[in-house]
Amino acid sequence: MILIIHLIFGYCLHSKLCGTNYPVCISFIVVNEFCERFSYYGMKAVLTLYFINYLHWNQNLSTAVYHAFSSLCYFTPILGALIADSWLGKFKTIVYLSVVYVLGHVVKSVGAIPSVGDSTIHIALSMMGLILIAFGTGGIKPCVAAFGGDQFDEEHTNERRKFFSIFYMSINAGSLLSTVITPILRGNVQCFGGDCYALAFGVPAILMVIALVVFISGSGMYKKSPPEGNVLLDVCRCLGLAIKNRWMSSKYDSKRKHWLDWAEEKYPKRLIHEIKMVLRVLVLFIPLPMFWALFDQQGSRWTLQATRMNMAFMLNALLILMFVPIFDVVIISQYPQISFTSALSKSFTYAISHRYTSVRCTSGSQDFSINLGLLDSGASYTVILKGVSHPTANNVHIAWQIPQYALMTAGEVMFSIPGIEFSYSQAPANMKSLLQAGWLLTVAFGNVIVLIVAEGAGLDQWMEFLLFAGLLVAVCIIFSIMAYFYTYVDLGELDKLFPDKTTFIKRSTPGNHFTLILLLWYVNKNV
Image (cartoon, rainbow, N blue to C red):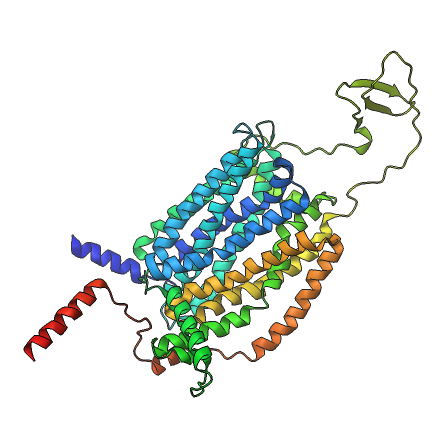
């Protein structure tokens, strides 16, 4: 029986997709990423509107909280990388933090139910849910891509590069479907007497559960690299020692080729060389947050821009043809019709006191309803209606956003996919999650930039858009110069330079100290 299990496990571990060099297990990782991204972007698609319409925050506060949440989602990858590389390994880190992720979605959905407490409870649950989601999604971000890359043999670099493209396609497929479906759930499905935010947040929670189940299902097929020590802690200590020695010895000691070489007295040369590799990549990442500062405004400023535009768009008909059969069978039996109320039929309300009196008058061609609150009583009132202009609201068509999205998507494809693959290929084996976290930090700092500008600059919207676009042009020029002088690293050369793969110093434990004392006592007694 044990032999049979061993043979099955060995087959699963080494089996390939349809005779190719793609491991079977990557299909589980791709499906997991699709469901997780559906969960994340589906929730974010209605988050800004949730802040404004449900929590009744203003646009600037909603934008600030949205980008604060986004930045937290991309700061926490450092924590996930630390846990994966130093403690649990990538697989367990993904599983455990996915559970935290699911809990965050559940709490967020409960906070969107009107009957659960007052506005303070809703805000508290919403913030708690967002924090849990940020730790969950951020913690697994650097692990999933690196874990997928680990499934390939070193010689299959071309297949691994294509995997990252497929991986990113799954991200955008999940994002596309979720940003279409969840707004429909919010606006067209009524619950609790209004827009159904609870359902719009609940469906992403279900997708995250599916993502977790799919990922665990492939457990027996994965290559699971064990954690290799406290990577981040050793890196920080090595950097600190190098800076300290460089500062204290610069006046009387000989020069070193690199300032990190001042840590050679305590740390292995291989570790120092690997840190140099990582630092070169991180320096290259410095200008990149500006791209994400512009890109991530799609979920805040662009969403608010769309609400002020003419929403009648022919793409909606195509999407309805695609999704109506699904919703008819799965969710709702009848798709509610969308109706637009004419501006001429809206009533004008003027509140003067808590007591309201409705006064109705009729002209020859149009009925008007005027609600007045009158402080006096028993008097006669004359209301004179003069011809006024009625400018058409939202007269700029939303189709004008298509060029924005098309260009941004083209830029994202050419920017993000190579970025993920570059971060993986240029990282030492024991620092791949760490460098993936460094790549994701560019997104975090990009959202921080938006947060600062939105709260502090006080610019008109058009000026703010031009500011970000101009800064990105300058950053593109700077990055092009930096990339021109970057030298790619061959990890095979690293093994040739340092055959001994030991990168971490072995720290003494109390047991080691006791053994050393006994050894010294024995030697002293017998000499």
